[in-house]
Image (cartoon, rainbow, N blue to C red; front, side):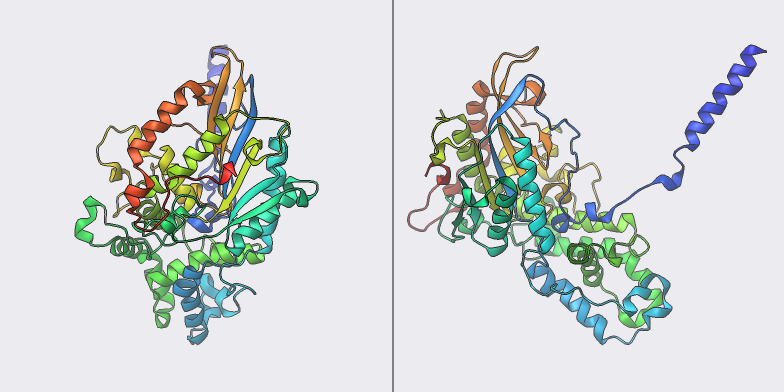
Length: 474
């Protein structure tokens, strides 16, 4: 009798546990799947502990950050958002009678949306918050007397906002603006602009790099992106056309609505275009993947020059972190922290140079592009643009002094992207999958061989071209 009672009690507990997570507990946030329009967030990909491993202390660090949230990207505005808004204002559809789309009856574009490329108020706050976070994370490191930024206004303003959060007196930090020249080669925070063979735009149809080998039948990459966009937008177009046939919804309209979710949220704090009654989670994942393949083939592993474009930053950063340092000196070369701000195109090239977010590292395949098909979504991919290039995406490279169990006391290095440690493939045998200093030179030489030199890969034919980034030495 006692046994029977215990069995029934156990079954009751199992049933209760099974029902504690009913099907409607599913949660999906479109704002975490907006590719380059994603607000700053920490995706915890992978979910490794961002704190230094036990027994380790960070003694120097470098941070490369994209600018923070802007009001609208110029290409997005001119090719998707403005045409959709204009079409909406000129169409006689009575939206008030269509439940899912009824908000369009009174919706107006947020003020400032047309100010293409301008840093938003939220963007300034986000960059200041990052400065505070960095200051708190590296409390034992000195405030840097100098930080660097690409010359565009939104990037410069992000750097100044960061300085406000980093230092008690932001005037203690000199913000050095670097010209975004087309003949500055590798000695720039926009080295892709000096690379004739780098043909990426802003992660969209402007990308015109060579089509990947397995997409030859699809023609140019632009065509492949548009083909996939037609695939993922087919369902919402059919759904909306059923209730509002006069509007003649197109793939560009659906894409523009998705962009508005992000940009309107930046300006108003929320957007009806983010409603899951409008676009389903599957459709948002289609939008994300459409951007993933674009960035992958324009500024990621699918580009033959991306790694070469990003490697000078990698080499310069590790050279500076490994160098002997005078802690009593305020010279640039002796700073504890090296902080730089740039555009969305730069971080992915650095990730490629370091071998991060590379599915093929574990597959043994010779086809590095096999993880990014152009006709369907690979939900297990490593390359997710929402994780790689959200607004204010940042790469931290840390030098650590460690004395912990199971490891030799000494110096180790690790990389974190958006607060998530990223093991450096081929050099991760240290605490917290960090890279031992004695293995780092060999790893760097190996990566340099894999990606090639800037001058050779980019075919720079202008005078004074260089393969070296030297801003941290001056």
